[in-house]
Image (cartoon, rainbow, N blue to C red; front, top):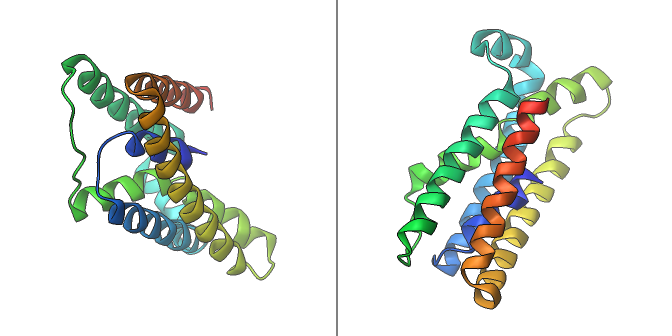
Amino acid sequence: MDTFSLAINIGTFNHPKKDDISYSMIVGLFHFVLPIIGAYLGVYLINIIAIKISTLLFFVFLFIAIEMFISLISKEEKDLKLNNLNKLIYAFSVSLDSLTVGLILKSMGHIWILGPIIFALEAAFFTFLGLTVGKFSYQKMGLKARILGLIIILVLAALQLAK
């Protein structure tokens, strides 16, 4: 849901249609790779990071909310043109909680590679769907769609603090 929510917000900004597919593919790739990394290195990474993933996600959501708020009060229409590094950072940030999924899948002892495959396809689909919904909602609602998106991001940030 965090991937879907953030994709809705990105969709409210003017960006090239071809980016919808690349965002979705990159997010899907990260949702495939990070659970595998989590399955093998998750315990070590969690100890090294020494910060709860939910706390890190809180700061990512808060940063995005601040950027959105600044965009709203500036009242200027911005195009969203993310370079490849920014796309990777976005995809990594919405996929970071996938590390813990790998730990869980590995501990279950099943054919756990199927989990990351399904997880990746689902993440790519919901990213694409979120971008499409965001674009549509902005066309119909204008700035109200961005305000609603900002509220959703703040709720997601608060939920991360509650974990």
